Image (cartoon, rainbow, N blue to C red):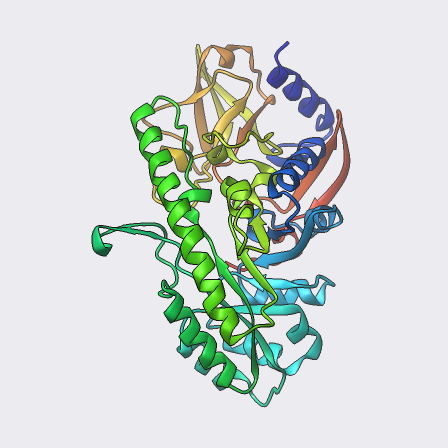
Length: 400
């Protein structure tokens, strides 16, 4: 029996008393992935990206481990909810225009002490001040660095279109603006190098693309390490008591941690290890989060149909954004239908061994987005479900 076949047998036994559709997290794999992230971080703390987890119970579990400290959130509403739930040191990774929540933040000492908001433009400060509604608490802010690689005098750009702050001078100028502005405190710098951390460099069947990606990433790492160091020096000249410099992501933990200027690493997807993280040479994780759909039809030889399954991930639309049939091995989508909203045909010889009511296990393309489809996660240890915990959705929280 292969390791994957053994996992399928375990998961089927563990959830035999449950009806599919359902989602699980294999806690042994989850914990092993967490340990590997800590190893790769080389002693620097890891701030957990909550959008990649979207389950308070599992956030608590990973933050109880040595090597993890703090949360990187994705909306202001989520940040305040987490702070009110007892989490501390929450860094909002994206600028917000949520005026009502800014009013809450500025009026509550506990929230203001726990949450740091992201800015990359003086207009963000204006929006926060206009939203205060009498609140006088000091708002903690972090500047976001544009980590993109620019070549040929800027005519070629590789990286996400995020912050407009690219040069040390630009970040230092905004740091001075914050320093002069009553009611704000600059506490950090963040830069997410998604073109390094979030792009696989060993795509199966595409050796030339993989080689080009590795070359691009090597160039980008060198350029960013030098520029980020200069940025941190420039900003510390304005704000010498800067508390943190955050960088990285699951795919670049060890290389980002090697930068002297970086004080902490962001990571989250590496806990669940969705299918987009199969194509990396720098690390290998264990799939920890899966969902199961029941077989409801057998249209013919070599074909079964499962209920639902059409859960595409965000990003540029393409086959790599689709869930992948994982267990049993040997199933694939019908090219004319793909995964559907209410039913998904699956092809392959393995289909002939499946009966009505059996389940097919899938891996999502991304990590936390799976939790927007399920209200609860069944936590598996060995061949037993030892707990069932709500996702954000299961707690009535749908932030985006």
